[in-house]
Image (cartoon, rainbow, N blue to C red; front, side):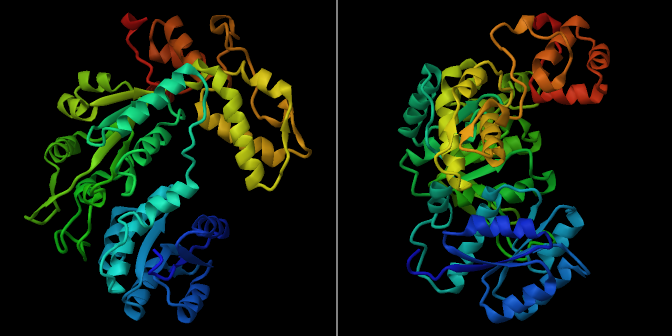
Length: 463
């Protein structure tokens, strides 16, 4: 993007920590960011600087963000606006789009979400600046993500090396769709990025979408895009995920939670590689690859008529399963060493060492949160560490042995081993959920949610 000046972004939000964190994320990229925590401060910045993009909280002290939006679009018609809010509803979304907002994000969102929103906006900014064409379709996304998102492959176990080999094989077949399975926190999106950036599609966009996070009323518009005037609030043409991912990769996370109403349309688009925007009749050809992921048993979803078998067959051309961290304990040490290096550098605590007791003790821990839990544990330990040596006291969990699970504590303490205790409680109650929830000391609805979270069946015939 050498032909362009840096895109100037103003973040207007009353939460100072939020504006600082988001501004920090933009640092070193193709953006120049400004922060404001009041409407008055934001207006002063807009008067002194040619702002390209405003990230605007809909709720500000003493003023309605929608009023700010209206004023901005009146005074700075070429400025793009992305509305954000922790209290979003459809009425607010519609009003914001009608007043000229380009996109709407609900807090909390991941940095990838704001990246995707900005990447769409970038296409319009470049048009306004009368560029001939984008030098790269992923000029905002892939370069920044390659720098900021850890795609290094860490692990020495034969299980994880096999996963890596499968990922490289998948990368060599860029037309084949891939299904990645594994427990939450095992690194499914990381493997998806390795596949993408090792493939011939690496110079194009990698778009990550949480299949269950989009409201059903916006699903079709988000995936297929829409034509200006196709519905209330559609004030401009908008590309959907399929169109944005032309020649790139669309990563569908939590695919098992995708609403049935969308699955047939996803299947057709995947098979034909042709889409039609909402409210339009023109067909658009787009060449995308789908990598999907789930921590559920998707075959059970098919059996229960919650997931289409034909769509599963289309998505499951290649299947990669990532084992839980407890199944490959030899990866704990290299992962811990890697995270210590990353966070000691980030928090300016160089030359930190790890006591031998840490490695020894963590090998006995079950890691229900998998690699994500180890990463978070290490980050916290480094933040709280006072000296130059990380000891077991710096880690926030109670370590217990996992080598003989059936002999572990008989207490139904969810903090120690939630999934194991739920399974034990169900078995002892002969899969009576009310009795099991009473034994665990939680409400039956909470037990049902946790069973879904850990993909625990209530079928006693499966014992």
